[in-house]
Length: 246
Image 1: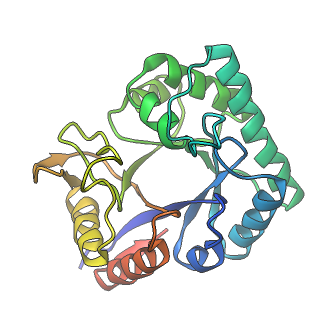
Image 2 (image 1 turned 90 degrees about the vertical axis):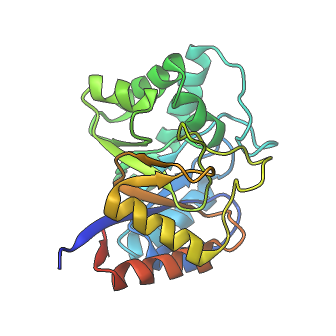
């Protein structure tokens, strides 16, 4: 039987406090670095946990907006956005170096991620920051997004991402969190759709439309109410289906 593999990541360091329980099941993580959440103490703690569990470390920068948890687009000039994102990533980079590890990737958070998926100017700022901080960093981004296309033009290594616990519209944008079906909590439902993502490289939308794509990492949001239950069950069931986590 053919053995497949998939990276499983989670957004962490966001104040939920479940990282100790999540880390044993992850192969990579995205650490909040001061935009929507996180500070030096939380970054240090999560980096140490990731290191001890041999989990790849990524920066999870955001619009600087703790009030709305980075889920609202903030109007900023490209230069101001560049300065903010670069400072966030470099802050985590300093922590990582102090702990003897290196960053593996960058994954924008929330509204920044969604905006960069369709807005060229925002995507170009993110790629400019990545190049300035460390051009060998990977970028976690949706396949065929504007952000991914610009990354390819800039010779940045892409890791195509899909979300285990979020609903998708037919254009593969995420269902608004204000709508029913935006966040999935049923672990069997999550597993079945992720298995389809991994084996067939297809996403089933909220309207039950199957859309072909490319997926090499699956995200479970660390702040989803039952995130630990979901990721533990998901990883266990994937392994039972000869899909390794790496």
